[in-house]
Image (cartoon, rainbow, N blue to C red; front, side, top):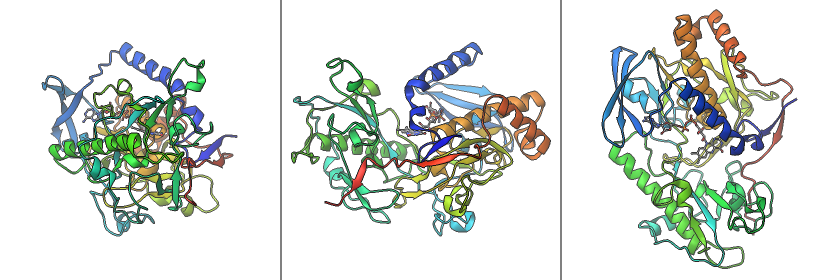
Length: 455
Ligand SMILES: Cc1cc2nc3c(=O)[nH]c(=O)nc-3n(C[C@H](O)[C@H](O)[C@H](O)COP(=O)(O)OP(=O)(O)OC[C@H]3O[C@@H](n4cnc5c(N)ncnc54)[C@H](O)[C@@H]3O)c2cc1C
């Protein structure tokens, strides 16, 4: 029997401990180096050359340091970028933002399509708290703008974004977030300090580490003013700058104005951990992207395939005979650039169909992350780490299979015999294609660090 926590990302939180993942990353890196793989850091794909319609001959990568271009020819090209950057460059048909209900038949989809309605991005940061010290930064340029910012969303947001009061994504009732550095009760989701704490001083000899380290990835830093998928490069950079100003403003507000549980204001001892982020401003090097471009696929996963409400009495989502993996997370959409508040829908443990990895027109390009054939709504549960990694592993395996067997991704998808053989290969590699039928779902609300604002 396997127990799964509802609302968590595919497995029990303890299984996602980075301490256990890190050696695995290192092993992957070592294996790739041994195989002679070349990993190009700080390169960005800027152009593709087509051999014929739907067939890429070469991709041009720009070295972001020297600005020099490098052309790579290959038989297959996989896009595992956060934004699905290869898709527009190779002429693939793709979607962004919200599809219409008419197109997808989804209960949570809007009446009309809205390609610019994309989930917010976030510029995260790490901080510590040194009691009695003063680390207050200079007020960010846009501080007053963000301090007074009231999100214009539907359903409405209760007030200012920089506040301890925010809607509970599941119930939309107003919740109060706890925040009390080093003073929160030691339990899961006790408050925002411990919510994404990446270092806990209690785990060391007293005095060995002065402060915990808290990673800030909170609703307050969700930048919902512009999407960075349908814009010029200049606009994209401007939006990221504004998102950075929002995060810095949140940090400054925490230092100076945020209401404290003891009735005071602000924690001047909060200090940005620039060393952890490796940046001068203390913010992450790149925004957290929740929603990317998505290929128009042979098969699109829709809300009714995975939503619990569409499958009364079932414990699993729709069964896909072309399954190439499994995943689980609630449909969790953060406030969006089109003015939607949270869309949070209970889902069931699901499968990943191969059809969602096969682009309708491209023959030698595959999505290898959250850029598969989901919708704006189902991206909300397929955008998570275990799922993206499953997709990436299978995309790589599919290419290897096609090269060995002289097949194409589309022929493997369409020919049932080939599909079975490919699925057998995946199982041999340890990729699970179905959930156990005796799965037990337990409830675990990732928003439980907030309590109803009843005061
Ligand atoms: C702050 C944050 C919190 C998260 N929380 C959770 C969570 O609680 N649970 C969970 O399951 N998942 C979470 N995720 C998502 C999880 O981190 C991702 O699903 C996972 O990292 C995806 O791994 P990946 O290897 O597919 O892509 P990534 O690790 O995102 O790698 C993408 C790579 O593509 C490169 N790239 C981007 N654009 C281009 C381009 N144009 N040309 C060339 N290269 C490019 C980037 O430099 C990067 O190296 C979170 C992510 C973030 C950022």
